[in-house]
Image (cartoon, rainbow, N blue to C red; front, side):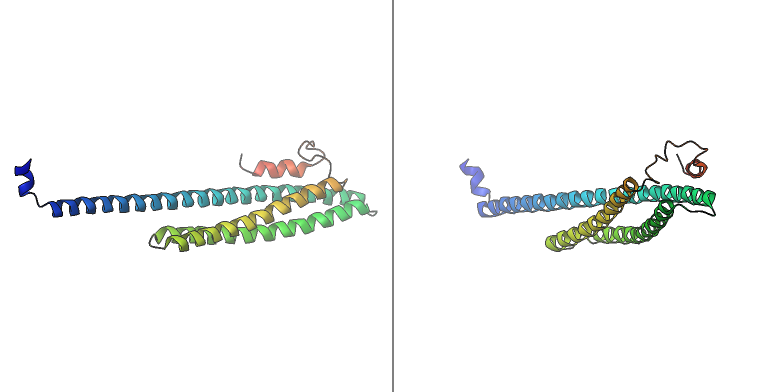
Length: 192
């Protein structure tokens, strides 16, 4: 053993081992940071995907609102020259809701483009500091959540409105084609 250690430069060997340990720790730390970033990207991508599917659901909801509106319009036209005040109020309220839903869908479509662009920019710039990266991801998640909350409040408002108005409380999904042919026709245009 003495012959081996005599020819080994021990300070250099111990320095090499120390450098290897330091390098391994640095790689582990960088790997854990990359893993944390990947987890954050996955979480924000899942939130963005849920938001996108919510927007698709709102589009389907818009078609049902339009079908209900057309149905009410024909019911009002059948009553002419007289009119039913409840039907007219339900139609007017449904029209206002439709306009708000269309405005929300425009806003959501633009926001979806912006969110996708911001997420791509964050993926392209991996050199961002950890705190800055986390701050930008948190801000993006907060913006997505705010728009999702707006969509949920619109859906809740429609449910409450439908329950409150007797003219709309009929179940249009189960109505026969004779009572609401427009709903059947519009559903026929939609993809399965």
